[in-house]
Length: 390
Image (cartoon, rainbow, N blue to C red):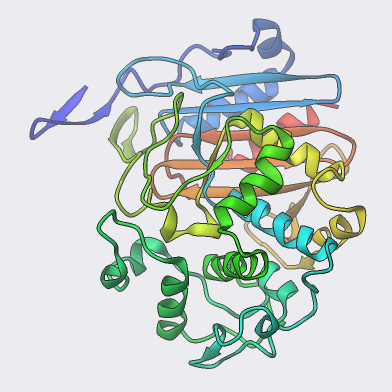
């Protein structure tokens, strides 16, 4: 360990990649051998990502699990598929699914103005809720700008309650007053955490219950996602068992890490709410995506709406085809396409889950905030896992 000022900040040998094919509970050496290409991609990704990384994948016939590195800098252990971590923006897929359930119930219309459901929320500072539709907010085409929680936290300091939480409605109101629209509605795709916080307010207004209650009763409990939760405001802990989150830097083989699992800003659920407040596990995320694409979460008609994409060029990764409602689409080198969403958590987690319409699935994560385009990328690992599950 490297210790500075009495505080553990990093590890060298311990967080180097463990033996290739190191498997968590439920994995086998055979799985590593059968999926050597994915293990190599995972090892390569972990070499520039967090202390550890893992992928859980499979098809209708079964699942397999590979890991690299370590779940902790204090003790060498593999990341397990049933351990909790913050899924960050993967929360958006759950949020979109709840809104589409309300569409199924006839309580929300996708192409209706947001003003109908949230009167006065999108008004002023250049906003007009009569010109912004529910679909546009779900698809990141509303013109509502993105909101970086770490950057915005000082501006929201006056909203903090004694437990460090904030009221999502007050946070959204302040953010909209602070930042004018980034574009006119329907003009372009502009990824927006703030927009998904608005989606959460819409769900609460229509259902009369909190977003946490809506997601829990409508999705988590119905699907039996025992390792998934919408974190309560003020609760920055993770349920056991969990994977610690880290932020840090690498200098060649030397790695410096600070554990940030419960950092006051990045881990506070109410600061991201419907855009990123959830925790889950690799196995549960795969189960959710499988159920969603199998029509077990929303109706076939609603799922069709979720899969209508707004195409957008992405020079950094030409595999990316566009964005739907809480879903994104990529092409696979082995043929076909996959629906996915990723999540980058400031408190130390990077993750992505994807599934195909023929029943293949893959969920992967690293226990660090790793927002780079260095290859292999998370999409490279996911693509290898999906193609290796045919």
